[in-house]
Amino acid sequence: MPELSQDAERVRAPLPFGVAEVTGPSMVPTLRHGDRLLVHYGARVRRGDVIVLRHPFQQDLLVVKRAAERRDGGWWVLGDNAYAGGDSTDYGVVPDELVLGRVRFRYRPRPAARRSPLALLLWLLTSARPVLSDRSASRRLRAR
Image 1: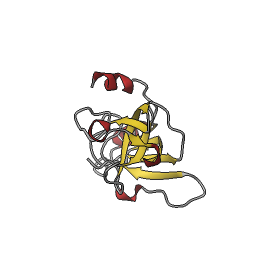
Image 2: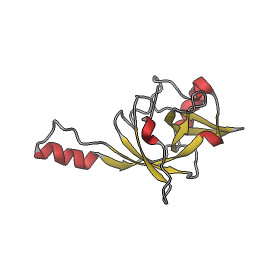
Image 3: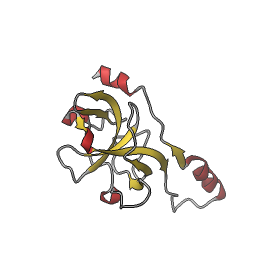
């Protein structure tokens, strides 16, 4: 169930941005294992945003989920992969103080095995993109 590598914590820096690495399948197809994320710490969270938070029961563990709905006391968060679990259906509402930031950008590292010019071109075209809000997350919430 871990979503981010342990070194995802922001180091005190003048800018509130940090890099995190995704581990696990709970945000597939939006994010895949090995993706790198640019996280905007302290950013305002809106419904549908992909966010980084501390796990409510294991606060040394960072996870990435989608903020599905604002509720009393915090955020109801869901993974994009309904079959992976490990979201608010397991641990309830996440308090605001556990929400660390919003994911702004995703990039995939270049596979070392693929060195052809075509593979490099395909990687360049698909490896980096902004992570956008998805307001349809609430439809999945109503279905549960």
